[in-house]
Image (cartoon, rainbow, N blue to C red):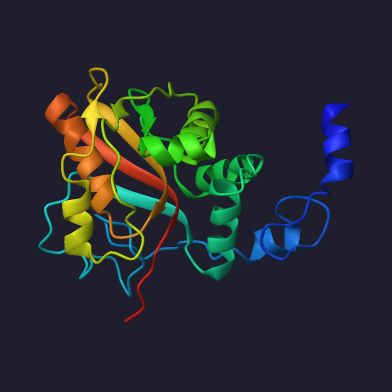
Length: 225
């Protein structure tokens, strides 16, 4: 009854095109730009042909073994992620889980799924954490355990608008292990921008005892050259 009443008071609208009906309409779902091969084997950036390292990750000491994403972070996806993160449209998590599970093969059976933890202040303000919801959904879809392995002991300034060197400095030492990780971890986040956050989080897991960390995100920024 509460759900019906809420739908009457606040009718559902597509987060991308604002048409009434559902949080993501079929037309917009179809138009979301999928990340398709060929890809950089390391960071997952779309490339002209398969490469082991691309210009985006070459020469960088990344903490993760690979990074993969389901969709490109274009204007439509930006609206979707903003509605999911900032306006608490939690039902969008199910769409994100389905798209990621469709794009990325199931990890090996000995893998544990975890997530990049939120900044304490922003997590408290939002009251939910999309990366945690995505990790839980993927764990269920892949039939793998999903557990928190990291925490953020301190708040940090937002990464938005910062160049890569500033992003690296901003997240240096930002994470701590909250339990001993297994050997193989899939680390989940909502958006991969430069990889600075994912790399620092993965590096923390490696220092705590993990042997192999792969990063999976719903969306990623794609730089056209």
